[in-house]
Image (cartoon, rainbow, N blue to C red; front, top):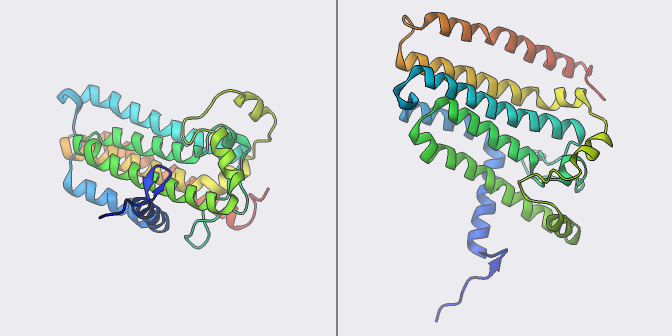
Length: 257
């Protein structure tokens, strides 16, 4: 006679443990998994033109950039108004305190909502059916596994305080009620945004430019679209210069706040 596995939050314990292990693994190796995933996508899939139209595809690219920019904007607001130390320590989950103020009073995971928008925007720019069917769900599933692992960690560390927080605040979907008052009550820290976010901004913009160049090379070749490709390549110059400048300022503690 078999015995049913114990339930943890409506999920069997073995399954919950597997999700938490996966979340910790993805969290620890995320800096390597993301580039590896991109290489796999480029090797096994190809960008497509919606309805076979180049002009329509340009609007698809604009849509992808807008979705990604929305994710970046959310990340900037969250970091600027209330930065949460959940980035980990030595590639492990860490949280010195439970942050409930700022945007975290309206969504428990606003940074991950921003990440999801960034990934979705890049997927739209690439515009491959296989990325929509397989690639994007895998990436988003990895983020969700990290969230589940963090939830388990926070519940174990903060107990009833975290449970009460979960009852009051949605996991993902931000509650707009009182958001304006929240923002008015806090000071926006641009230096903190530059310190914490310059790497992510540089990374997704670099990938977006590369995908825009790649789709032109795949569909038309360099000779046919060299003007477009050269303009996109030139965008790397100010982007790299901005990255190097902020990195220098950070290294020399000019961005301390």
